[in-house]
Structures are given as structure tokens and as C-alpha cells.
Length: 264
Image (tube, rainbow, N blue to C red):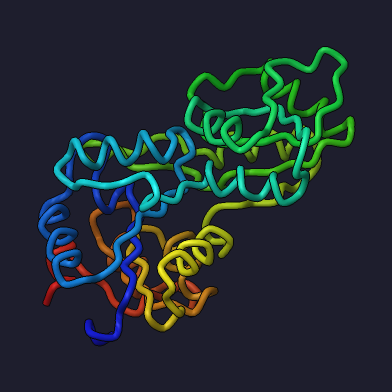
């Protein structure tokens, strides 16, 4: 993985750049150095709770100046997918937070706050920290009524400050899948949809791209599926032992202890 051959560096956020509101050691200096070398830097997250604008604001506040177009979220990727599926007048029932709804609305998707007998085209499920039985029931009923079930991601957990974990969007997705008996189309990692969009924006081929993440079943697997270079950083949810024992489709090309090692 010769540095001079890499055009685009794509970083996961939770567990890689930060944990909650704690910036990971050497994250800011690593990003700054890569940019000063002329590398294109993007951020790719499965967390759908915030919009690209909110994530760019957070990164900038933490010392990594970032524009919204440098961020790809599962929420925005889902909005692009729904537009492809139904270019006009699409209506979605959403289990998710403000960032997901903001990206869908800005892409022309109508958000149904309740069913009320209306035709629902999509049930979109992401991380929702106000998830309850009523939302589960409404999602189930909309799917029974013919709505397409779309998941932003299936991450079971996501990392917080102090090394703790909390339930991820996959927990809500599993509940809706169990209640409806339907498997969703999953937009986020490890599906390559969002990664391919970034490579197109960066005008980078897979062999000119490296993805850096902390999860084997999302970050590393999506890179392997897309043919990019893969780097696992041990600051998130995956241990070194798990990485070395991973199946071939999830085994990272390189394992590092901190982002500073990318510059070596």
C-alpha cells in the first residue's frame, strides 16, 4: 500500500475519528497531514442520526475542518437510493432521528409521521433512541401494506466515550424484520453503494483508495467487496485477536493501533 499510489482516504467516524465527543489521539494531525500532501479525504459513517451538515460541523468543532460534501452518511446514501427507486412523490415512514429525516426531506422524500391510512412507499429504519412499540407497530403495518423495507445499516452497536458501547441501528432493524418477517435492503456498509459514490466523487479507482475503519463486518468487508485497500484501527470495537482470526472476506490488509501509523 504505497502512499504515493493512494488518491483517496476514506475514514469511518465512530471509533476511528472520535468516540462520542472525544477526538481520537492523532486524528486531527493525521487528516491535516494527508490533506497537505494532496490526498482527498472523505468520511463514511453508518450512523444515520445526523445529517452531513451536522457531521461536518462536529468534525470542524473537534479540530478537523470539514465541508458537508466530504461526508457520506448512511442517511444521505439512503436518500439517494430512494430517489433512484421513486424519483417523485415518494412517501416514507421513518424509524430514525432528525439527521435521517433531514436528508430524506432535502432529497424530496415526503415523511409520514403516522400512517393514517395513507399509502407508504418505504419504511426506512435507522438508529432511533426514541424507538418504541408504536413505531415498531407502524413500521410492521406499513410493510404489510406493501412498503419497501430499507435499512440505513445493520450495526448492532456503536462506540461511546470511555470504551463503552450502546445499541446501534441494527437493533431497530432486527426488531422490524422480526415483526414483519421481511428482510430489508441495506444501504450502508458492508454494501458498496455509498463507497462507490465517494470513489466517483474523488475520481479514484479502487486500487487508489483506502478505507480506514474499526469494524470488520462493515468497514473492512465493504472495502474488500469494492476492491479497495483496507486498514483496521484498534481504537473502536474490534480487538487485535478478532482481526487476526477474521475470515478472509473480513481480514484487513493492515492493522494499526492509532491513526498516526498511517503516516509512517
